[in-house]
Each structure stands twice: as C-alpha cells, then as structure tokens.
Image (cartoon, rainbow, N blue to C red; front, side):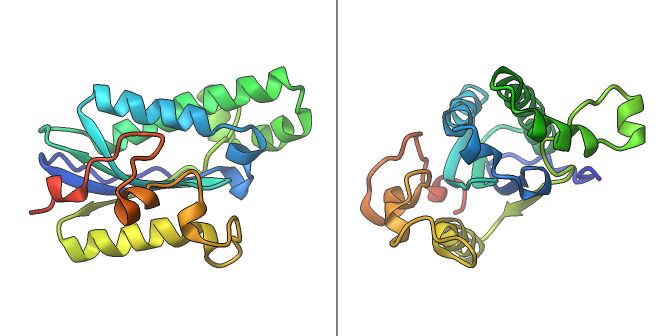
Length: 188
C-alpha cells in the first residue's frame, strides 16, 4: 500500500516515518546510519531541511522542512526508500547475507514481482503529516527524541546519549551529525 497523500505547500514542516520490512533491524545490522546521513545531506541540496530526527535500528522518524513551493513529499520519500533499498540489497549481496535476502525476496507480492520488483526492503507505506502548530511539532519531537528509551527500546540509559538523534540540538544546543534547522523556521 502506498501513500496517496498529495501535499504541495511551501514553508511547511512534515513529520515523516518509515520502517524496514517486517521491522527487521537492517539499519543496525548493516551499519547503515551513514547512508541515511548522506540522504539528509542530499535533502539540503534540494532545499529541504532536517528539523529533527531519530534513526532507530529498523525505522526512521524525522521532521523535514521546506520553503519551496510544489514539493511532492511523497515523491521525495518514495525515492529515498527506493535508493536506500538498492544500497541495502547491494550490501546484503556483498556480505552474502542470503537468509535476509531470501526474506526480502519473499516479501514481494505477485503484482509487484510482475512489475520487476525483486526485494521488499521497507514497509510499503510511510507516515507523512504536515505540521502546522508548535504544539504538534513539540509532540512529535518529544516522541522522536524519546523513542530510543521507549517501549521495547532500551538503546541507551538516557535519551540524550543516543547517537543517531537530534536530541542534543534541542536540549543542549549542540549540532548533530547532520545540520538541524530549528522548527521555528517553518512554524510561526
């Protein structure tokens, strides 16, 4: 199932979330974090800005902002998932991780297979929500930043210590591995 949402507004902040197929810890198992940071850098070249994120072992939450008009956010995320999927499959093949490749191959539906798809690396859909109020943004940032210590996740003792997050930017004023643009640039 793909996202049918069509949002084409300028000066907007979007909450985005997408997940690896069957919640497999592909980001962690393949040390894929730097690939995601590279994608964040690519977003900047497209005049889209990261206003918050957490990269979990098998999913990503983030806030993407833009001042551009006619940004098709579903296309941006769809392309990101597609190119990340190519990289993940390439790494799996190079490392001869055939068991995981087999799982990803079996995740492809018959109709997708007819269209040439070989591996199902991510869940077919993703969440995207435009953020119009500071209250909503703060709710999403709180969720994003506490994700590493919430529910089944006990990745660190203190959420401030999680490496792959924008937490330190908002809590301590320290930039993370990627440039963070404060959400106030988009919510006013």
